Length: 452
Image 1: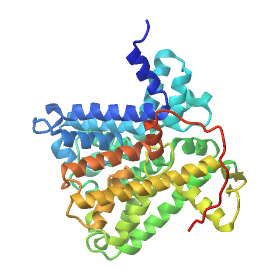
Image 2 (image 1 turned 30 degrees about the horizontal axis):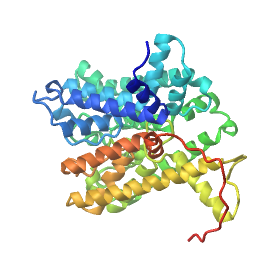
Image 3 (image 1 turned 45 degrees about the horizontal axis):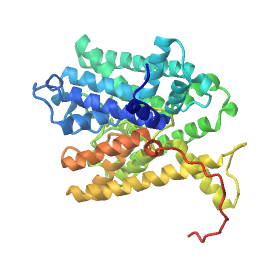
Image 4 (image 1 turned 90 degrees about the horizontal axis):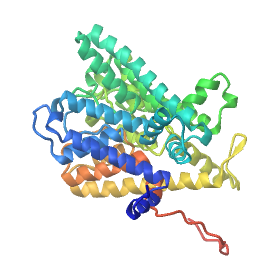
């Protein structure tokens, strides 16, 4: 059967993988908004207003964790299940799930489906897409199951929760943790468990593993005993992640040690656990075991930096990614040394990768700056608080000083846009909006320009 002219035009318009990914995430958000706006989704039985439903759906699909209402108090069990499902879909990626569905139904992949899945999973070999997607889904579900079992046992034995409730709490928070979402079913998030390692450590481990990125996790599984064989991606991701985890923990220990509203009230083992947990969460999960609003300004600024960097590529974390941050450091170092090429170990960084690193960083800084200015004009809060919320939304983190719920509808819509852009990436969004790729078939004369 022949396609209509309108259908053909629409099909031809959305052939770029970035366009399909952006459109798919948008469709998932709209579907989630419709479900959460239903009376079945609220505890009161009254339909949620569309801004609340849109904000929550976007936060779930973009695995952020920012909320404008109390998750456990406002939403019904149906609403919470919808949120968990949206988190799972957003974490794995629309194209990953679509590719898995294609494999199960058709038993094979077409070229177009392979390209789309490759764009979502960041695989380097298109022939490996089907195997990679299968491994991604199996690995994700296995990690979530392990964390869910540990949390369930703890809720059963340590807090006297009924079996069904313990399983529900364990499963919900395992999904939220591995996908770096940060949604919790208590009004104070995880503050009541600040000194409980059986709650904090499994959640922190799930956040770290989910935020490393699937290519890195698979390579570590294959050759963890032989670091010399690791690719540049794995070396940078693991190295920068470890450095940021250590630095983040030490910074929070140093700055918050005597703060009576945060670490000051805990004993030394509790301080170490809380500082580590707080240092992990900007990876980018929105769980908090300390009151973020009570952190010193120096701690808020350190958290801003960690949230902006984020986690690993092709994982569930957001931010500009630790790979981008690491490569940017190598680019700056090579420029300072006057070297014409950027070398990392025994490999040379491609010029197009250098442009991507600089573009992602510059676009992200610009978006955060503009959004901070606009939100400052829309709210009466301080620069520290506004910048924190903006970076948290853009980095799909979900940590909050508590001002998100008080923002105006315009402020909520601005944060929705930031979460969406932060999830799919500035360059992905830009290429998705482009009508077509333009190739220049000539070179212009070169001219030196004074820089700086």
